[in-house]
Amino acid sequence: MHNDIEKVVFSEEQIAARVKELGEELSRDYAGKKPLVICVLKGAFIFMADLVKCMDVPVELDFMAVSSYGASTKSSGVVRIIKDLDVSVEGRDVLIVEDIIDTGLTLSYLIEVLQGRKANDVKVVTLFDKPARRTTSMEANYKGFVLPDEFIVGYGLDFAEQYRNLPYIGVLKPEIYTDDAK
Ligand SMILES: O=P(O)(O)OC[C@H]1O[C@H](OP(=O)(O)OP(=O)(O)O)[C@H](O)[C@@H]1O
Ligand code: HPA
Ligand SMILES: [Mg+2]
Image (tube, rainbow, N blue to C red; front, top):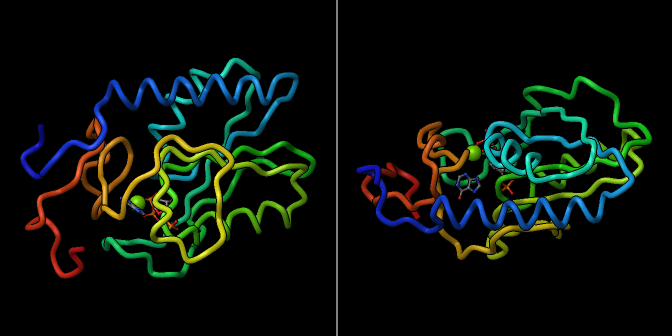
């Protein structure tokens, strides 16, 4: 285990098992369709890679980068598009892949943008959901795990751009956070 980690919340094996279940559910629901699967960078990159390997339908992939957290554990409340999609979503069945829904600001912004671009259907799959911190009415269509109000890292999720490569989900030791801990 990494020295900065206080405890492991989900092991690599627990995550893999849940991702497989989500992939199977999505394969059933998208049977006969060709969804445009959108990865919300950077946090969702590992989840997206593992999830689409468990989806047994033809998928097209694209990537979008949005950011609201910077080097803090709290959302700035301002969502910025850093990298836009390469393809048009008009008339497409879009599946947004997120690592985590916290305040819901990132996703409510993204959904509004994609609906404004006339997607046929916009659904959301998130690996983690922290409903206690919601400031919007955002609800995912598919979710992996529901979490208490704890800042997590690993499996794509960062604190100040670190720890994304940990294969498990963990909570950092309190001394790792600087000014905005808890
Ligand atoms: O529901 P919210 O409060 O909006 O928080 C969730 C979003 O915040 C994180 O991204 P971040 O903006 O930190 O960028 P990153 O994916 O590059 O880490 C996370 O990956 C989600 O996209
Ligand atoms: O718990 C979290 N960890 C990492 N990034 C995040 N962005 C929102 N919530 C989190
Ligand atoms: Mg992040």
